[in-house]
Image 1 (cartoon, rainbow, N blue to C red):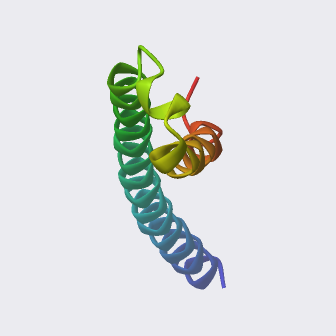
Image 2: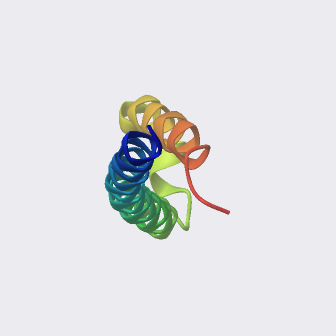
Length: 83
């Protein structure tokens, strides 16, 4: 009886170790992905501000509406960056 219990406990601990290790690896991969996405969003925001630093596009009637929509999209994306 004690031998069976020891074997079951060993199998449970070994299985748990591999499950936890697999989940940790997946978590680290997702953290790297989120970090890269955050960097890309920040870079996009920086470039968007650089392009219109003199408000030329924003004030232009023909392209102004489009630029305003791009800025709205960028503001929505900025909510997903890491602080």
